[in-house]
Length: 149
Image 1 (cartoon, rainbow, N blue to C red):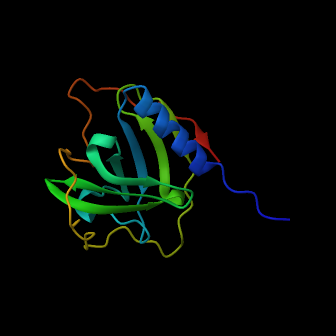
Image 2 (image 1 turned 90 degrees about the horizontal axis):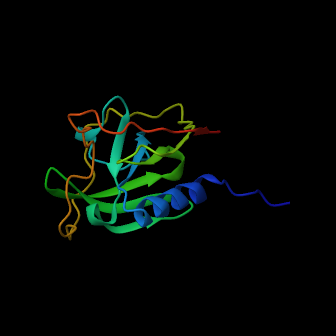
């Protein structure tokens, strides 16, 4: 008997599509380890939050294995790679609705590496900062998430 695939990538894709179709800004919270390729300068406490809206990314791909795209960080285009296993949550920035997931990291994982991911050859057009957008000064919407095991 074959192994049943995880529901996680399907749920992440569904919530991403819901955010985009509803005019919301999809954000993913990522638990960073050695398998995640993001600019390490934007990682805080082993995590990073990425704005993955279509206007903030280029060459966006979300399949059963990983999320990958190009995004700008401080005006510099970067290649992003996040294994599905490292996605801790996906939610709409505007209202906080979304879903959280348990993330089990490898024992040898380290998020303190100083190296950045390579700069993308072709930067996304008209993109804004894609990571660690602070909440609005008024506090903004906080994610209302349900943890899925």
